[in-house]
Image (tube, rainbow, N blue to C red):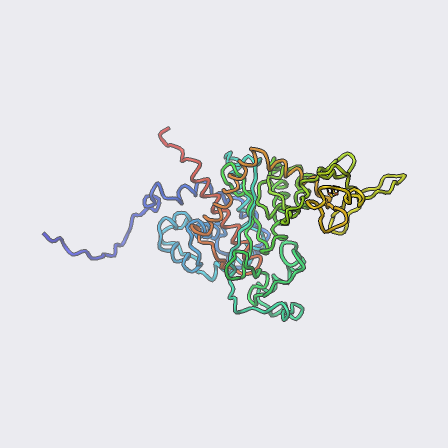
Length: 461
Ligand code: SF4
């Protein structure tokens, strides 16, 4: 029998409880257990006037942003619509059925205004990291660092070549926000001052983004998302936005190590990273200044392709500061006998040269394998070699092999960031936009981690 036709009848009164309509296993329910925004009002207090029209609740704004980043909703307009329509999102945002959802323009205004001035997103991120540490998910001993390119919200046609780019002619009074931020960060080590080399092209709409072909495909404008994670459970301990050049990424690593030490008193035993981080100065900084074991492959260009002896074939005598060649002869910096021994003299690149005696090489049977085109053999050593040797020794240990596997965890987080959270292209422009997006994404990833690893307490227990 065909039942009666269903027609919506507008009821005068509803008895409706949002709580009852959010499934127990909904991911936002698990995440909600770890969202503690009780301190943000106090954090923001100085940025609100005591008079005027009441603003939108900052906690609501943050909860909406967390919904967006946890659920991979990238558009602000769509996020406002989704929170309006989705019961679980409303529940997470503490909105009842009849409560109004802020429109997307109010949303943007707050993101670029008070939130940014007060560094609120950093505060929220650190609150979640502190929770991860309290829950025992991060011991802070074995850390890994890496950077990933995230495409900037720019059009590659809308750019100027380095020959024609003239930042001095930009008027900050009329320039858009992202261009003003670019001017403000010209002396910043993570952006303008990272390298004196000018990029081939500079974007008009987001000049701080870097023109890069690092992915071996067509070049594009990008920022680097730098993550420092604890490898116990892949908790992101710190995040930093930088220009997509190696110097800026190395600087970001140092910034993150010091900031984590100051904020959470974390003194890692080892730092795991790929070859891009294996420069002499950075290894020395880790070993000598911070006492951290570098589980990082050393960048070594001393190898030779012509089959002649490499530097590794020469033994360094630390006590006498000489090299011993395969023929058993000594290579020294200088053969003059000084009354007062001199400190090794390096050139402006920090390189010290050791030379064999011409008389030794002339009569040597190994000369064709050693220096067939030179009168005598020369070997170079940088002033960072002791720290590079520390990294080389670690490279041969079983712990290093374990570290190589642990390093994959940070790569997995970047894959998750791009595929699941859909942050493969930024929506906000400028260094501050990139910073905000990376902080929110890292916060969302840590919250999802907490929700996954810390089980719900059993009410029956
Ligand atoms: S050529 Fe000179 S440096 Fe090379 S093995 Fe012979 S003596 Fe030593």
